[in-house]
Image (cartoon, rainbow, N blue to C red; front, top):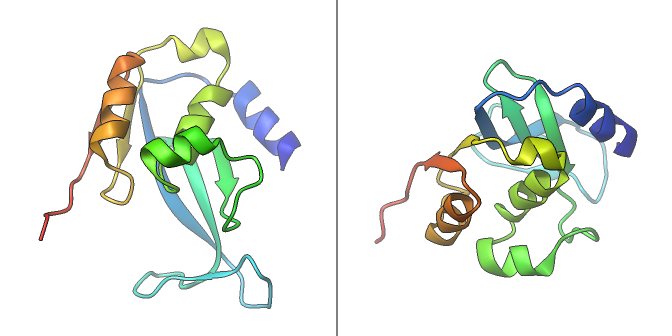
Length: 134
């Protein structure tokens, strides 16, 4: 997976709009990392956090394992377990490419005020849906 990530980064042609979302890789066998998500088209499999271009190019990814041994605790504490991989993926982008004014798009699972503030502080735009407080 490390080699795949490196190749995806190497061949990434930067564009302004990037999408961050979860994806399910179908798997019906037994494995401790297998997830079940009710109401999804693919309910059983491996959950993968993905950073994509609008055309579907996979820029970076992280397979959800429950407790990530490579996680930065500061990111998890500040942004939560779901948005933390996004910040690590941004850190993985080549330094000269990180300086570009990206716009990130994500859904309500990832959207939080602290995340939006941090992205703005880094010079990025962000659009995310919000959940209604009840």
